Image (tube, rainbow, N blue to C red):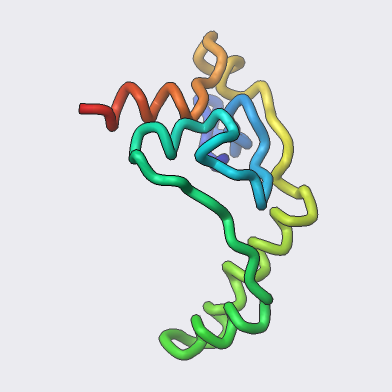
Length: 107
């Protein structure tokens, strides 16, 4: 997911073919991360306050709150959506993470 400026100068909500969900077991959910790296990749849920405190030890608390808030939004489903932006602009459907990883990271 990304917000980019499109050819018409307007901001575009650019997303792949699947929404972003927290807690998905990446290595076995079709993303290909585990296949390409040879390692199991998991999302481990941590308490937001614990994360904020750990981050705040190394940065201003206002900055430490940002990833905690973003994780909360993802957990609530705010990013579990797709758009037609890639296909509309390029004429091709968006590629998935598995394809990109296999194309660009495999020896």
